[in-house]
Figure 1: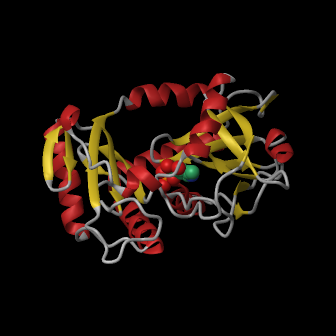
Figure 2: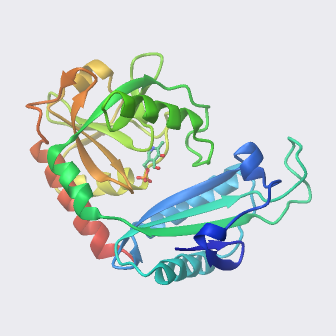
Length: 285
Ligand code: PLP
């Protein structure tokens, strides 16, 4: 494998960044994760838009133009010789002697790009069966709209889920409402048959897959309501699913001890999965 680090393409096993990088010391950095179809990046515009917003919210300089960054990602895919997979892009503030305040003048941001093949057929097999989720308290900070590499609460929640035999954790606020998954957005088809997902004024990540799916669902004549739902509502829902660039639309068939619907992926979830994947393949660039 080949990685891009700070202007160079290097063997993955030998790739490294400086010990005083603020990404390493303070999680002072942001990332994006793209699905790759046929060597092309899925939902490219949405991910780039969010990357620039995350950087701007943290006052990290743009390391290069969008065109240059996309070129680097394409080149990293090419050097890793695969068609279907994923790209991970990380931008940290850069190297400075350890001190909490944001350094002034700003250091040069560190850019890392990795790319790997993914067995999408295996993802499809999982989707046909559906997954279980485990609810966990949402103990994250107040700026989950910024896609930072500070993911320890997410890692702990997902670990708890995996240890309980579930695939994803659903994070729950103090009022009992689901915010989102540890690395996915959360959705239900409620008792009235309305598609529900949390609004982006809440403390959640503005998922790119979520955004695209809202458009696709509306085009397909499926009503979408961006309104919070409780764990109890989710357990009583007709269908549930998660969305992310890694899993697309993944049906949820169990929440904690409860079975969702008849315990199999629901028809709306399956339809949306097909719509999303077909659109993502057709528009990848
Ligand atoms: N929510 C969180 C906390 C995430 O980390 C992610 C993806 O990494 C998502 C939602 C899904 O976002 P996207 O659809 O842009 O991949």
